[in-house]
Image (tube, rainbow over all chains, first blue to last red; front, top):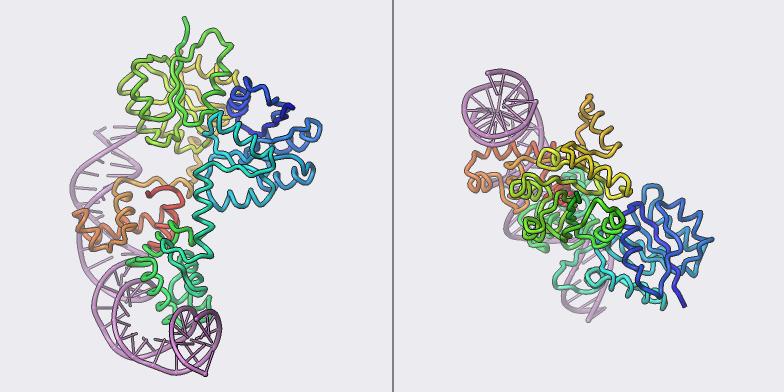
Length: 212
Length: 212
DNA sequence: TTAGAATTCAGGGAATACCCTTAGAAAATA
DNA sequence: TATTTTCTAAGGGTATTCCCTGAATTCTAA
């Protein structure tokens, strides 16, 4: 059985690149290539692909919205998100909205084929480094992770307010607590995050993914 | 006479895509493909291309620096910058540092060939929309873009020192300048990055990849 | 060579952050 | 219930940042 593949990408070079990569693979056939979201929505039902390689950064439609719409139309279709970015929050959103796989655009032919086979089996395919990141991220939140400080609810709120560049007074107004209490939380944040000042709080918090 | 072409891009798909695009064109021959800056610098002299299609966003070397280095080595070589971004400030910088052309990655085959011919004649090639943007820019809309803050050497040094959680005094000791000078740089950083305080400087700098 | 950046520095004051300690009340947990 | 953690808040400082103005020197690109 030949797998029918469609590709959506506004970069012609990427389209040609994938076509070339798959040209000598007998198990697959490219049944459609689209340059944007609207073209994809118009033609995908007629082309009936088994898998769609979908660039998330399209000129016309937000990738996640597009993903949702396509899945609604064709629930059987497997979608592999294709992008340059490896933002964890983004990966999570796209995977929660219909995508079955996530590939970076520097993918080699072998990995592309592996990804296709995996999603066709009904499994999820993620590149190794993305998988690792997701793991770390998942473990970081609910569990006691010795590498990432775990903050109390209030500390988290103060942290976010500091990240918004608010002053102690402004934070106290926002959270309806005394400025002195805000200072206490700030001191505790410094201690927990190993920072010498607010700059360090924000730097470490961002590196540990405590913000977003 | 056959034109010798080399390509530098860390995305295999782009490499394959360009190869495919040029495969049926007799006037050109691809003599080398490189995945990063160092590979390019190592091999380009031996491959002797007439034109280099150079992705500006490489994993290892800053595109502009790389461009300078290559031109120093091979002054005859024509370089066409290849990228996803159409930031005017960026276009100007790269064109002022050795590139002869600027193409977006959504370029079609016809335009690619046209660009190659143009730069080989010794002229500059820019895509139409980039050309228009440059025109508009030159005609008097100096809208400074908050997304592309470009920092001076000293500002970058002060930025990095702030990120190290140093105080003004400590930074002044480190850089052998007066604390007052450090404050001036800090103020300019706030202004350039649209920040209200040092926390904002670091937050925006990290988001824009000005640190690391 | 000449205008524009970039770098340097200063005074002085207001605002804010930093740092220590202490401690009661509320909430979560064992 | 008892214990721990969290949240609250204060006094009383010192250190640092923030903000304004103004200005000389050096570098750099047209």
